[in-house]
Structure formats: structure tokens, C-alpha cells
Image (tube, rainbow, N blue to C red; front, side, top):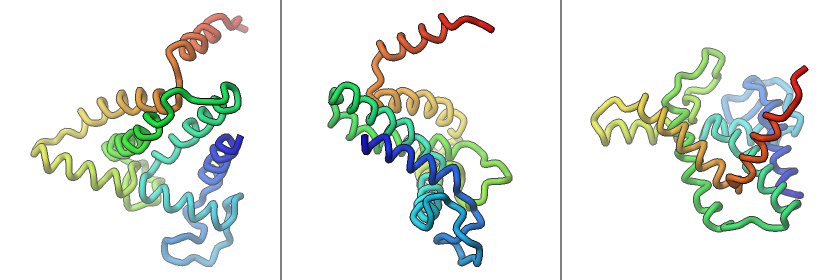
Length: 171
């Protein structure tokens, strides 16, 4: 149950984040607008700067794990899933770093945070080629599969979910 609460806290922190509220960036005189207060504001600011929007992947991850632990009282191959999680998050930061941020993005680092920018820069330098487009396409595919695996989603879960949507009556 605590893992589901953690997913809700991450969601709350991210959805109520404001770039103008006080955080680790240069001091501002504004009040904290984050519903989780100072801890939520600092968490949102730190994670968005370091890993960018990748932090949003933690929400379905924690929610799925919490659901599995409550419903099934366990998770198959938990250590493999835990070990693969940081790799999946790093892959997501690189993938997001290949995408251009919108003008409303208030951070110097791109959508993948400074970790994604740094890792992408090293990959481009290592290969000596402009591989951003390839990394974006491959990264989206691999990140999606890794996320499904680390969440504990099985082929049976996906089949049941897709069948339930295809049998819904149309209005």
C-alpha cells in the first residue's frame, strides 16, 4: 500500500510544481505553491533538473508495484526488475534528451534533464555521428518494453486489458 501512496506523492509533487516557487534555483520571494510544501517543491525541482520528465515514469512504476503487492502479495523476479529499473530510467533520460523541449520548459537542461543531456552528448561523441533520431526511435521502443517489464506487466495482463477495451459498447 505504501508504494501506491508513493506513486500518488510523486504525481502530486509533479502536477503542482511551479517554476516560480522557491527551490534550489536562485532564491525567489514567492510562496511555495506545491501541495506537498517545501519537500514537494524541492523534490520536483531536483528530479526535473537531473532526470527531466523521466521522473513521471516512476508514477506507473510505483502504482503497478503497489497494485501487484496488494493484489498478488508478491512480484515475480523482483530483483531482476529492481536491477533493470535504473537502466530503464537512464535509457528514458537519453531518449527524452533527443527531443526538443517546448518554449515553456523552464530548465536549462532538456526534457531528459542534465543526466540525459550528458549521456546523449557522450554517445554522440563516442559514435562520431548524429544519431539523435535513431536513439529517439529505439529509445522509445526499448523504454516502453523495459517499463512494462519492471512494472511486472505480463502478456496476459496486456491481453486482458486490450480485450476489455475492445468489448466496450460504443455510445
